[in-house]
Image 1 (cartoon, rainbow, N blue to C red):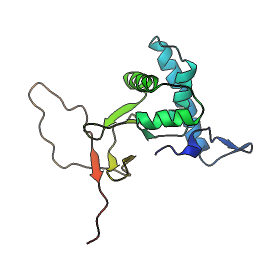
Image 2 (cartoon, rainbow, N blue to C red):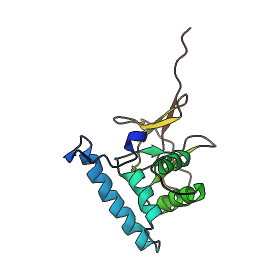
Image 3 (cartoon, rainbow, N blue to C red):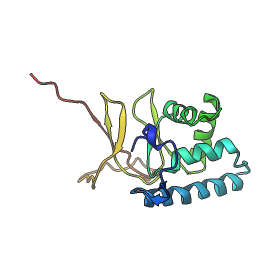
Image 4 (tube, rainbow, N blue to C red):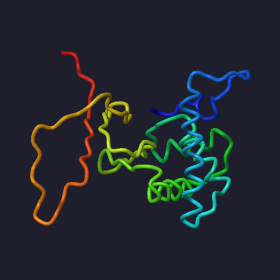
Length: 165
């Protein structure tokens, strides 16, 4: 899920009523509390900036976001933050296991709030990363090199829009 401008603020209530994504928001609130706890355990203070960034990241369910998109989202909410703070916070969240960094090519990384191992589609033309719905199966895998065990398989399926002839 990519964050849209309307998602920069908490969508959990609309005119006092729970919105359609309340369940995702509830999960996001749990993740934000987990984030604060993880920061404290790592000896990092849950500063106002870290809390605001975690609200953007975890407040709307799973998302795939770049550092630049997170910076834009933070600035759009009126947050005063530097790009260095964005990168530092993302890297700290990755180290704490709160985010998973996914490199789609040699120059671009996305940060995924769903830290489980799962496959992705990367839409080349749009620069968008999304989860693959359903299951991906492999019928034959290579044997690991001697002394190594397979830890996980990262799958990114790059898609490009077909050109009509």
